Image (tube, rainbow, N blue to C red; front, side, top):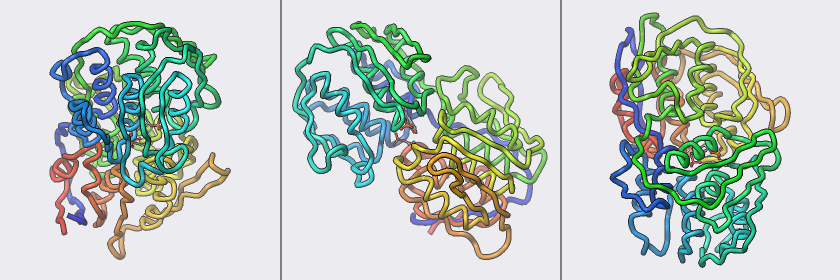
Length: 414
Ligand SMILES: O=C(O)C1=C[C@@H](OP(=O)(O)O)[C@@H](O)[C@H](O)C1
Ligand SMILES: C=C(OP(=O)(O)O)C(=O)O
């Protein structure tokens, strides 16, 4: 299918949504489990996400000479470190966009530990050729924190295997920190101790042996965000959704959606088996820093646009090097709803404002090979007819998304 048309709903809803599992937790669990020599069957509730299924497939067959990760950032970065430290001879590649996403910071760090890695096309970007590992003897490593936390997570997961461990100094500003905390928390569950001093940006991991363990992946808070949007945008006061499989104490930083959505009109109540979302009063203006939760930015921009809430956003720097340039994609598509996302201070502060257009020609939203563009805009279909192009992009993180949307909205596919 190349388009989905969504039709507004004229009454309230009360539904349960069986959320997908987190691909971030899944991909960490798979790498750590492989390093621990565990069996995949010890990991439960692994994500259906294509990014995770790609990781499972590549880890299952060590003889594959070319590891094609498609468009999965974590799979590319985590596997590069895994293959490097295990001395694999391997080519790493991905989609054309993956070959535009930076990896030089990780490659430099791995080379300084002793990995033989060369670039097959452009310096600093996939595809890569991995040619084995000869430990360099150094445990002190510096790494920039401002491009992608995935480089840091990748290095941390292989640290216990190195003869002297690693003392990692994070330099510059740090984005997506909760993902690093997620990595450390999952390593801890497999027996690894780390000494962390965030005030100095230091993480010290001695040489240690991973203990194999069982691990159950939680539902995905990033995927949950789109259901928060549905409740926020429903015009009916008694609309509610129960999102299943979420924990109160999550490893996922995107659980911040609970706090962000409160001023946008959604209250979260823990039910023991997930969260019940109900409607509450929304503000008319809000400032938010997305440094810790970049994957929520698209969700929040679309909700604000459709509710005529003025938004001041910071922490969007990393959005330019994700599945697409997400700032540009948002700027192009939000205009179709009557909103403008304007850069106020270069690459720092943005303001979103406008007047939501409920009537007129049906907006057609382009998705730029980015699952989050499709899922962030879908909730608008509750309040006005909308077409979303290439809806299949959701498979990267949430293959069952449109099936779940069917619970709330009528749609037709072309
Ligand atoms: O480690 C992870 O699982 C992720 C880290 C984040 O990337 P960056 O660290 O590049 O911001 C996030 O955007 C991505 O969806 C998943
Ligand atoms: C940025 C994302 O994923 P990745 O970097 O792993 O491709 C995402 O899922 O929004």
